[in-house]
Amino acid sequence: MTGHEHSHTYGPSGTGTVVLDLGGDTGALIIYTGRQLLGREIEVSRADRDGEPRTHSAVRERRVQDGTFHSAVYPDLPAGVYTVWWDSDTPVGSVTVAGGVVAEFALPTSVSTTTD
Figure 1 (cartoon, rainbow, N blue to C red):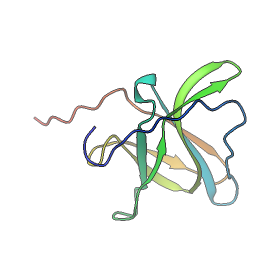
Figure 2: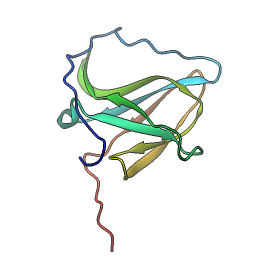
Figure 3: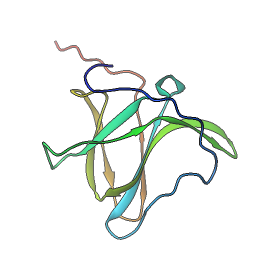
Figure 4: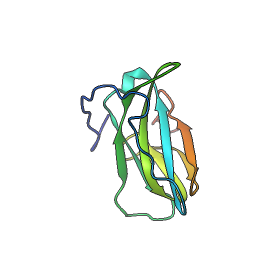
């Protein structure tokens, strides 16, 4: 990690502990990661609004009825296309958030920053 990334230590969240604010032009986003990113904050930004502040969420362990997974949850994003950032300079993809819907994105386990 470089730049502005940092980590936090949070306990696991259980089933039903995350409240999503869905409806109208508001959707939610879940970014799935591996356990190795536990505590890391992942930033997203509107793809069509360069220069606006990014939104971030910490990767937490999520305990559900069927097991455990790791993710960052963004419970109330305005509808639009979002860039997902690996670090302050490296985008890893984009995802469309629609009003009233939960969008999902699988973060890669690593990103190559070399150029040919």
